[in-house]
Every structure is written in structure tokens, then in C-alpha cells.
Amino acid sequence: MPETQRVPIKLKVNGKLSELEVEPRMLLVEMIREALDLTGTHVGCDTSFCGACTVLLNGLPVKSCTVFAVQADQGEVLTVEGLACQDELHPIQQAFVIQHGLQCGYCTPGMEISAYYLLSKNPSPSEKDIRKAIAGNTCRCTGYQNILRAIETAAEMMRR
Amino acid sequence: MYPRPFHYHRASSLKEAATLLAELGEEARPLAGGQSLIPLMKLRFANPSHLVDLNFIPGLSYVKQDAGTFRFGPLTRHAEVEHSEIAARIPIIHDCAAGIADVQVRNRGTMAGSLAEADPSGDWAPVLLTLETQVCCLGPKGERPVPLAQFIEDAYTTVLDPDELISEIAVKAPPTNSGGAYLGFKRCAPVYPSAAVAVQLTMEDGLCREARIYLAAVGLTPIRASEAEAALAGRPIDPQTTRAAAEAARATADPQPDMRGSADFKRQLIFTLTQRAVDVAARRACGEHVEVSHIYA
Image 1 (cartoon, rainbow over the protein chains, first blue to last red):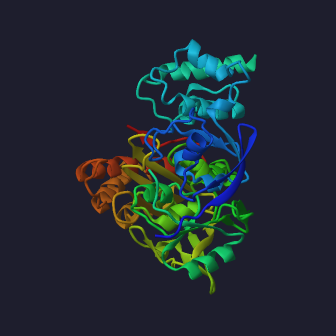
Image 2 (cartoon, rainbow over the protein chains, first blue to last red):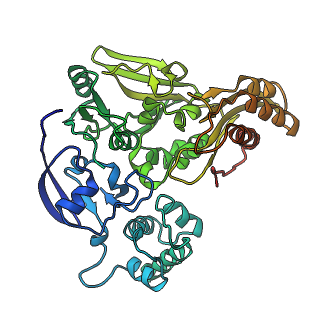
Image 3 (tube, each protein chain N blue to C red):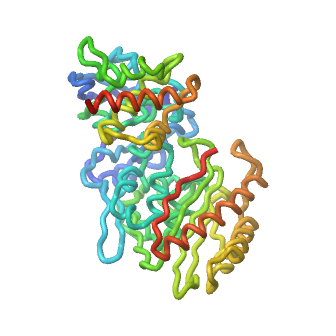
């Protein structure tokens, strides 16, 4: 077994610069949760299926259980904690509350990051667009209908 | 889940990556999109001692066209292909790119990685096999082009030496009277298709001049459905010839029963998907704009 290597990395998470040393095998999601203590990002299946761990890496949604932390070096990460503006929830978060877009809430952080990316690219998505955007986010409670409504409501709120 | 510990190397050029792989030996692996390799490492099915990260090498993600050839870079992501001008013009490329897993996986996973992994259920190999595709392999000794049909030898096995990398994928642009379609049946977005069919047809005076049909996820490698192609060549594409081709494709499929379904179920999927893909490909070859996507359970 090779001796433990530690790689220095520097990245911005939710706008804040972090410098840390990581083992190469540390996954991005573990770095976010355990090294940076941002536990909003969830580990669901841990197999790249469910999307609970979705974050934006350099502006694009990725499953952070399937990226090594060292690969985020020199990059920017946005997690669900970065959506709210101080004490005010982001319109996407407000819309999930209004439309009951969650039950247990486990998938919600990933769902909201996927919605955030969709609405930043497409302010008026059709239902089909929304379904495609969240195809990589699994919810085992809601049956998705309220999530679709929440994202539609968020789009309306953000267009105002 | 953590992979076994490994040493991490960051290459600054493709040449350097190949040299590193040569120095580090067979226990080293290149890291491109990582969307198959990282899950395999987490499950400890793959246990490389060294990873050579290609993601910090500038200029490897591109989609371009010159003199009738499409060129895809060694780090071109599925999402880049999906949104490219080439995908807008060549429908089978769009069908494939847009149908791979989900937004998140398409943002990381690469076309070259898909070919190099040679998963029996991979999407790019069957699609690119219906077009004329060359895979450029770069090693410490230089570069060599390999036709895609010879590149994949077996399940998870290619002609790539351990110190070789894909440096480019070159695809000959099909003629304007040619149209294709890639259709699969999927249980849900993030998973591989249970079965899929890639069809590219060239039409002339109402007859099919050339047909290329490859079956995906129903054999150890993509299977060329030569008898299905012969059922169409020189004939009009009508319900009778389409059905004959679909029956031939069903007979050619060699599926294994697994969690995605029984062998009979997959053969039946091949029959139905071939019928639909031939119909769409023929209409596209005649200039019709037809939007399709995989069928989701």
C-alpha cells in the first residue's frame, strides 16, 4: 500500500476561499461535509445515481460523490448553503416551502442546486425541461409533482 | 465509501501523461471524467496505485470540424457534444450525447473515456461505429490511428497499451442524404440502457443505399447487425423491410439476463427499438426533423 500522500488544494466554496490538504482519495462531498463542515450537501446512494450530493463545480452541476476533492483545486464550488442571501432564503428554497416540494428533505439540497442551474440557463422552462434537468436527482417521497410545481413557482418568482 | 489509497499525479500535457503512465507501469490509470472509474474504485473493483489526472491539461475539450471530419478532444464531455453545432446537424450524435445518464454525469463524463472503458453497455461505441470513426492513440512512442471497429477487442478491453491514451476521435461526416438514430430503453436516466440500437441509413432515389446497424448492451461488445443491414440495402424503407430488419436484429442480439431484464425481454426490446430507429433514421435521411429520446420505463 502506498504511503499516504497529501495534496494541498485551494478553492472557493460559496465565495469563501479555503486552503486545505487532502488525501487524493477524499471525495469532494466528504471534503465539503467533513473538512468544511457544510453538511447541507447530502450523501445518498454514494454510487453516482441519486444526485443528493449535487453541487456546482465551476458553474456546472456534478455529483460530488463522484469527483475527487483534488480535482476541485483552483475551482469554485456552490453548495446549498450558498443559495440563501444572509437571512433570506433563495426564491428556489422559498418555492420548495410554498409548494411542499419535499417530504423527508434528503434529496432537497441536490434538487435545489439542479433547479438553480436550470433556472440560470433557462428562466422559463417547460415541464419537460424541468424533468430533464432533475433526471439525475432521485426523490423517494414526493412522486416529483410538488417538486415540478416548486421549480415552476421559483421560475415565476425569479422572473419578477 | 473510499477507494483504496493511491498516488495522485497531475499531468500538464497529454505527452507527459503518457510518459507518466509508462514510468508508473500497469498499476497506473489515467483519470478523465471519472464517472465510471471513480464508482469502480469506490466499490474496489478497480484499485489503481496511481492516478494520472488529465483534467488540468489545457485545450483537450473541443468539438471541431475540418474537411468533412468531426474531431473530438480527449477530454470532450458528453454535455459539450450535446450542445455542439455538430450535434445539431447530425441527429444520431445528439441522440447519444443527450441520452447519456443525467445532467451531472454528462458534465463530467467524456466520449474518449467511454470508448476507452469499453463497457458493454456504453453508448458512444455503437453510435460511432455506424459512422466512420478513427481513434487516435498516443503513447511514449508516438501516435497511431486505429479504426473504432478494431479498437474495441472485448468487454472492457481495447487495443490501448497501459501507457497509451486517446488523443483524438475523428468521425467522418455522413453525406447529406444520410440519417441516423440512436434509441434505447432505460429504467431511468442515471443508468445504462437495458438495450439500444444505433442505425445510420443513406438513401438514394427512395432506396436505402447503405445501412449500418449496431446493437448496444446485448453482447460483450457492440454487435454489428449485418443481416439486418442486408434486409434494408437496396430496398425502400417500408413496414415490410423495416420488420425484416428488426427480426434479423433480434436474431443477432446475444443478451445476458441480468437485473435489467431477461434475455428474451432484451431481444424483444431490440426488435422494437430497431423498427423505431430505422423509421426515424430513414425520415431524417430524407431531411425531416424528427426529435426522439430514449424510452424510459
